[in-house]
Image 1 (cartoon, rainbow, N blue to C red):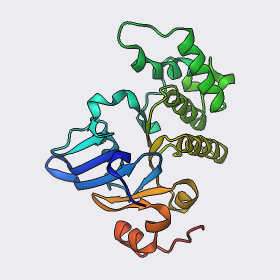
Image 2 (image 1 turned 60 degrees about the horizontal axis):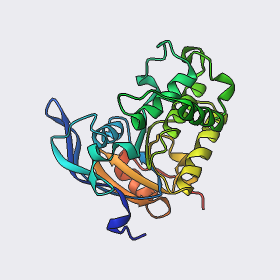
Image 3 (image 1 turned 30 degrees about the vertical axis):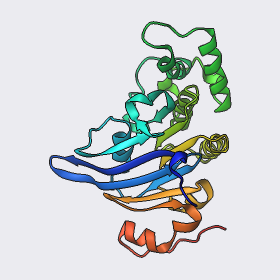
Length: 248
């Protein structure tokens, strides 16, 4: 697949991130086209979550640049939604599922306006889409791990973004929730959205994704799953000889 410049959703050049002078991402170059559902895979400590946070400006790189649709992220924030790792969220915060989803509308309202009926309607529709409408008044601390993940997906959906970043959305969820989430992600991709997902289950990559980036501090390979999800790149990334049966 030829990636034309005007079709790029994300372009990363020479990105380097270090903690206490130790590089956790080194000289990353990456081109991600519009309309792909992409997995970021690599071993623990490879910098997968760090890459997303650096793109979003949560972590400041020591070198390199990131462009979203050809412009700096700070000018494109309205086009981006982010679902963080479930373990980084304070689930004991006293708020309901509906309130959490409504938070996803704040960015489009600005600092002064408060959410109204239109935002409530969007939030309820998102809850219905992820199968959580019946739990709209439930405290988030009372929800299961899979239900909590669906709520955060609904919060991202109401932002109606062009690019969605998701940090291990399948972590700690049951099989039913995983199937429901991937169905929604594929629907978003088919609608032209771009989705970047930190993922750890190599066996499901060919089934779930059409684009993949191999990462282990350095960028190993990136491109269509059918072309680069192979034993050679897996071995380069994980350092051992992987044998993976790739579904046609």
